[in-house]
Image (cartoon, rainbow, N blue to C red; front, side, top):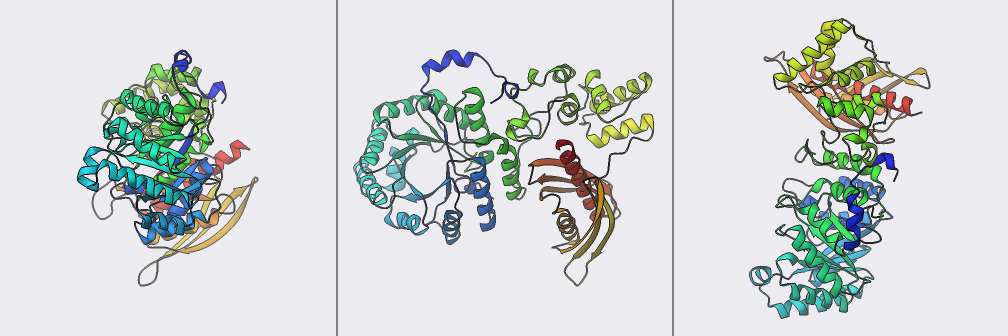
Amino acid sequence: MEKKEIYVSTMMEKLRKNLLLPDKAYFFDTTLRDGEQTPGISFTHEEKLSIASSLNELGIDVIEAGFPVISEGDFAACRDISKLGLNSEIIGLARMKKLDIDKVIEADMDSIHVFIATSELHMREKLEMTPQEVIESIAEHVSYAKDHYEKVLFSAEDATRSDLDFLIKANKTAIEHGATRVNIPDTVGTISPNAFGFIVRQNYEALPKNIRIAVHCHNDFGLAVANTIAGFENGASEAQTTIMGLGERAGNASFEETAMSLYALYQVPMNINTRLIFPTAKLIESYCGGKIKIGRLQPLIGQNAFAHESGIHAHAMIKNARAYEPITPELIGIKRTDNVEEIVKQSIKLGKHTGGHALKAKLEDLGIHPSDEQFQKIFTNVKRYGDKGHEVAEEDFLAIVKDVMGELPEEEQYVILDELTVLTGSITPTSTVRLKIKNNGEFIEKLASSTGVGPVDASVKAIVKCFEPMSRVKLLEYNIDAITGGSDALGNVMIELMDLDTHYIVTTSATHEDIVMSSVLALLKGLNKIQSYKQTEK
C-alpha cells in the first residue's frame, strides 16, 4: 500500500509484539448462506451466481455457497457455483448428518463445512444429546466427510457459551478424525473482545499449529468486527464475514470493516483487491431489493464515510485529505482523485457548518466566479438554508447560486436524447429511444427498443442498451418522490448507476411532471457523468 492512501496511528507498532497476528489473513464469505438468512432477503439463482463471481473477483479465499440440503434452490446454487471455475474455494455447509454431507458431495463442491453445537444449552435443549454423544457424532461424521474431502472445516456452534475445556476437546476430536480447519463461532454475539480473544488464544495454544483457526462473529451487541479482530490478535487467521454485515438478527461481522481494519491498521497481507470493496457492496445492496440498504453512517461504505461539512474540517481537507480521513476512498473503490477540485466536489458537503474555503473551492470547481458581494450572499444563503434543518444538496446549491448570479455555465454533454417513444395500454410496455453519444470527440447516433414491466422500466432498458457499446452500466437504485400534491404532481427521481468497466458509481436526480421523463432525465445525467469521468481518466 502507498503511504498517501493511508494514515493511521503509530502506536500499533508498539503493540504488535504482544499479538499473535497471522502471516496472512484469509477471508471466508458467507453472504450466500448466513447473509441470505437475513429476514426478508432471498437472492434469485442468477443473483447468487453473480454474487459468487463478484466475490471471486474481490479476492475472497473461500465462498460458502449455501446449505445444499436445506432446499432444491440452495442445492442448485451450490452445484452451479461449483461449476463456474472460480479461483475461490467453494464450500458447502452440513450438519453432523450423513444426508447433509451427501448433499454437499452431490453438489460437487470443493470442500465441506460441518458443524454441531457444543454449549450445554444447545446440547440439552436443541440436540437432546449428551456431551459424549456429541463427541462421538463429531468423530463419526468428520471421518465420513474426510473420506470424500481433503479440506474439512469443523465448527462448534455456540462456542463462546461452551465450556472451554469441552470446546477444545471437540476441536481436537474433529482434527484427530480429519478436520483441517476449525471455526470458533460467537453464534449469538454474547461475548466481549477480551474474552473472545482469550478463547481463541487457548485454542491456538492447544491445537496443532498447521490448523487454520477461523472466527465467525455475530453483531447482537455491535461487537462482531471488534471480536473478529480480537480473534486475529490471538491466533486466528481466517475471518468469516458477510458483505455489508448481512445475517441473522443484527447480522455478521462486516467484511468491509474487518478487511480494511486488518489491512490498514495491522498491515496483515491478504488476497483482497481492496478497490473492489465498495463496488461489490453496492452491487449486493442492489440485490437486496431495497430491504437492506447501506446505512448513511456505515463505516467506510456509508454516504457520510468520506463526507465533510465543518468549516475546520473542510479547510484542512483542501490542504491535505489525510487530515480528517485515515484512508483514501479510492483504496476501497470509491472513485475520487486527490486534487482539490475533486475532493471538494465529492467529499465536502454544504450546510450550516460550511466555511468560506470550502465554498470558494466548490464554486471554482463548477467554474463559477462570483464577485465578493455575490460570494457573501451565496455564503449567507447556504448557511440560512442549513439552519432550517436541511442538507444543501447539489441541486439546492445550484439553485442558490443561480438565484444570486443568474444563468450558470453548462456542463459538457456526452449523451443527448433525440427521441423517446413509449407505447403502453393493452400491449407490453415498449420504449424506443434515439440517443446521440459522444465517443472520441464525435457524436454517433444510437437507436434501441426494449420492453419492460412498465414504461419506466422499458425506457431505462432501452437507454442502457443504446449505451452498451461505450459502457456496461447497472442501475443500482431507483427512488421516486412526489414533491407537489395533486394528480399533476411533479415527480423527483433519484438513481444510482455503476459503470461495470470502471466500477465508477454516480448518483443523480431529475424532476418532471411526467415520471417517465423524470426517470429518463436522471438516467441521462448519470450517463453523462460516467462519460465525463471516463474522458477525465484517459
